[in-house]
Image 1 (cartoon, rainbow, N blue to C red):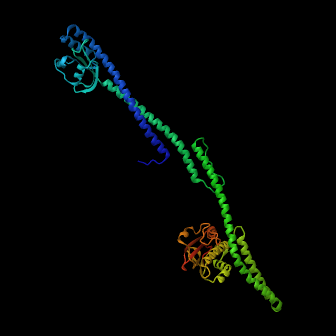
Image 2 (cartoon, rainbow, N blue to C red):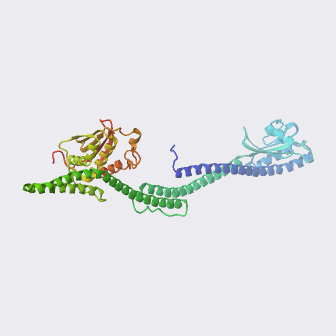
Image 3 (cartoon, rainbow, N blue to C red):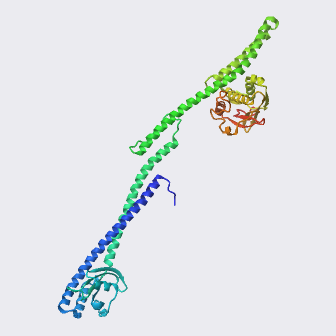
Length: 483
């Protein structure tokens, strides 16, 4: 049997079962009442017939005594012939159950001791019985006592054909059953229509829930109604509006958080930028001094001054580019050169904290076409996290290579690594293993968002140095041969 799961099927099934039980009880109650009515009607007919026969028999018994058997036999024979279509047999019983007269003369003077004969002789009121007789088949028997003063004259038994009663009972049963099934079918049809109307509305609401896009500006319109379905649709429409507004607010907040982390990263870059600017400034001061004391080589000194100023300009431009809240420029660049530029930004920490940096930069690395500043920002975040994990003394290994059609940049450190319980939450916002005040928990989240927007990804593994290893994967813009 197919499992019933939907509201439509449950409603029809349960209503059908409940209604069937109720109608079945009503059917038996009506049938019982009708059966008693039909039997009562036939009892009245039988009683009338037996009383019609008893009057002349009592008159004969009263006038001539019980010995007038020829008259009784003749009367009984004529009476049965008159009602031959209805009466199957007629018996006049005397004292002790002796047959005084019988519609079949061969039974005269026999003695009947059956239960129907005993009941007829002992009762003072007419008795009605329905039973099956071996000789006559279905019989409705009516019996009544003879005698006007006492019961000494015996009793009269009339056996009537029970087929009219059986036919009427069968006809009544068929009519009531037809009404029963007709009512059941009609009610089930009405319930089916109502159920389909209700479940169709619910299904429409469910389909709307499946197709709604919470990124759209307008909520999906659902049909209005004055019933509970309309109330549900109204509440769902309001829910859509709240979710859309909440998502819009979340997107604005997310953008602000990303920009905040970018500014925090720029702050961390400030020390590296200061280091990058200080070296050219020292060179500029030295060139200015040489211009005064060595006038023969002024052209070389001026060229060096220009190169130093260009270097400062590039450094400041990189810092401003990272701080600006605008779309990044898409262009082709070399991964290895960007890696070296990022290392220059953190060079002061490498020397100050005595961190050994090992570079394993692959040859023939294809060019990458995306945001150079975005990649360098993400790599800088990862390098800064590695330096924070290493502490004052340790090793950081940076590797670039091509694998499975992607350019991969791995940053491994010799730090303590990431606790196993935090690995699943590494790239979630505000998740950090650093001390309070030393990390926002947004660095890896923002870096992955940036790399993801370039069609790449960032993954975590345990490094060969014993600490953490983060790998940036980016699609290349050309093959290693430059084609």
